[in-house]
Length: 168
Image 1 (cartoon, rainbow, N blue to C red):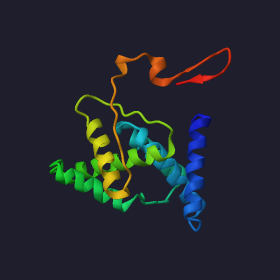
Image 2 (cartoon, rainbow, N blue to C red):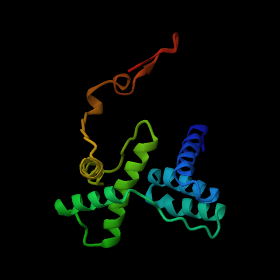
Image 3 (spheres, rainbow, N blue to C red):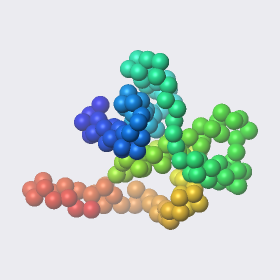
Image 4 (cartoon, rainbow, N blue to C red):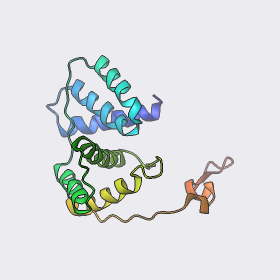
């Protein structure tokens, strides 16, 4: 962990504790660690991280909580667009991945979605945008851009080493 990652976990833990003051602190911390980090892992690293959580919090089972209205809208999007997998476990992973993106975007300034061609990046993004409109009444606009069409400084901004001013 770096300090910035630790700060994000602590901020999320504080938000969870304020939202559910009666929840024991070990459950709050476990949820914050799990929910902040699971979306960032590749499939092969998930069992390793779950093992670490089980070592830190033995016998502690904390179910994932989410936004039921958003989850319902995500499922409706998949059904309406005929993207409901015939394998229920894969379908639930797809829904969960969209929920993870939503939760990640609530706690982070920016998010990159990376993966192989045909890996579902656009589907997850479009599904979340539509589900936010439907369930949360959040007008969502996607503005895709080609990162190769602009310089790195134009894409991310640049820090002037002399004045320490950031320019977007």
